Image 1: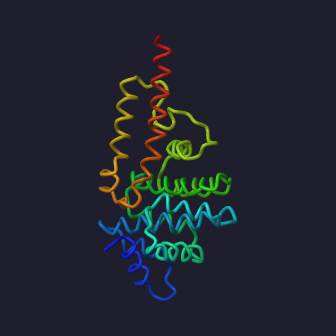
Image 2 (image 1 turned 90 degrees about the vertical axis):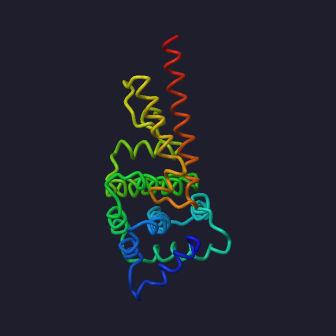
Image 3 (image 1 turned 45 degrees about the vertical axis):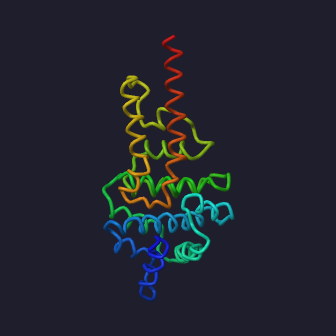
Amino acid sequence: MSIWAKITDAISALARGESLSVLFERLRRPPERSVAFTIAVIALGAKMAKADGQVTRDEVAAFRQVFHIPAADTAAAARVFNLAREDVAGFQDYARRIARMFEPAAPILEDLLSGLFHIAQADGHYHPAEDEFLARVAEIFGISPARFSALRATFIPDAPQDPFAILGISPEASAEDIRSRYRTLVRENHPDQMQARGVPPEAVNLAAHKMAAINRAYDEIVKSQTRQGG
């Protein structure tokens, strides 16, 4: 059964008047977590789209970049989006229920936030209301301000591009520590590792964008250190 079929089944199981957010209580164990992850990105993305007062075609299209959505399953994704947009439950309620599924600052919560950043910048304009929204979600997820800034720099072109912040390491760190940190990030963002922690195969292309930023940051640091050493 495809993940979209599972999502359709999960939504169909909602009792009349139940909030979409209750699904996060029911999908707390593997392999259901991958279903919860998908619903969470789409649902929080819908709430975020309301934060800047509009839903653009670019934002909707961004879901297709985060997830591989076959044409036959578009309706299932659209239903989640519309249910979340119309749900009286606030985004903070969604975020708290999602956070309870995992340990504070668990890597999968960063994966989820990465998907939201990708959607936020899809229309070419990162709205201050979106930044406030994502900062609050990060806080609820237990993600530190430093990691939030690193993710923002990774996905938002206009954000300050500090290569050390992107890698999450101090500029005073040794070359060995920087290399070790880089290798850790490469491992954490490998598709197999992402799927092992609950990211569905349909969404592992998130790693490509993140790894491109990580590689650029590492290369910039190495080149800078080489120039200084020379």
